[in-house]
Image 1 (cartoon, rainbow, N blue to C red):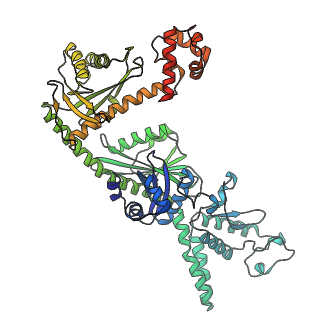
Image 2 (image 1 turned 45 degrees about the horizontal axis):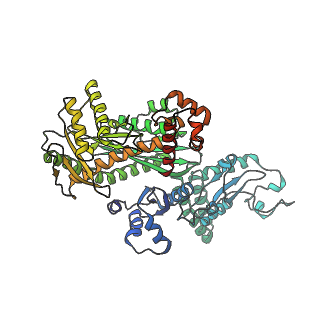
Image 3 (image 1 turned 30 degrees about the vertical axis):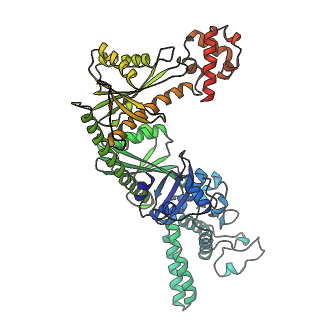
Length: 589
């Protein structure tokens, strides 16, 4: 999987994030060419800590940016957000220079470094900058072009800077306030991205020096002019208004929609979210529906920038936030960046999606032929799980046209008080299909049970009782708990299937999915959930006894550590023993 994913990385600048087996980001990097950089970890020779890091990597993600400078800034912010264990150089905020404008007691521009920026100061702090040298050079340029205070302290008399027009004479306390306000507005405007002001001033001085044959100074200022590009690159990500915003872009291709959401917090790109949607309705309706559900579950920022075709009038009312689109400027560039990321993500995923769809369709058709079924549209798969026999559950997953249909999944608490797979299978089968008949719901073309002949017979017994003619097969696992055999429910014969075939991988996926779903449900019931839901699992504890236990003991630990004699004052002794055995078993899981 990693090998295939590496082939899809684009030759574009961006930041990449390496993940371990738990999905935790362990390293964040940047690259001028993502493809070359990311592939170098796995195809080149690596040593030391890099080799150790690569040995832990099982997956990676990346964010495409417009420039390498943007990639650097994204790297900084992602490192601060996730604190990856293999990042060393950029963990300390002291490595990130900012340019600060100070207005009182006199105007000053300087390079500053902050661990935390106070809210009251945010409006006059700009950065982080790609490197300290560039930030210092920009500060020197501003000081050269504007009459800021240059000297230390507060001398009694004006100095040379005042006489040559590079200081307003702050020591005299007789300052031209109109000129001061104009200067301050121009400096702040420049730091917020309006480079025209500085360019015009530089060009004016260059022409002046050239006309007076001072070519050396003209050349110096020409070099300073080149550094304005640093500001421009930075502005493509940072907007200097400290508004928390998301940027939504999309791309449509081949019946699917790629969505990219960039998260910008405190003027910093801290991460992104990608999704691929299958178009079922109108594409714009799909996008609106997705965004609504996304923001019902996640933080809603103060404003959301988005591609112009998205109609967000309804979303604005429901989510109570601003949706904005721009045809030009910095915000438009951010939207374009999100659209590029959406396209790249969709293009990469489409390779896997189309491959998986083809494999799934072929596998479903092959299984239909193998079982001699006239139609195979829907498969119901069952699995049972129990603990001490008294706390049994079943799970059912549904695959339609070869794909999981998760809204059709169902969980069942089994009423049996003993470990009996046969009767557990009978109960869940009856409950599922008796209700389906009453409610007129769709029935499957095939039922897969986790187990062998015993489970098949239990299921068939109920189907016969309900007068239903549905094909039943069993999926048996080997001693390593992996899918091993498919058993025909009619002949009880083992159906030979090539272990490398699409149909075998398809059956394995179904069995793994139903097992995962059922086990997760079982763990939920045994988890650190509410005391009430845990007591619901114990046969012999009704509502009245449950309320008495909660009132007396308050939490699960107190019940687990209570003496049986005390518990038997509320519940029967055998139920008290079962309860404590169950609670102790939860600790061992």
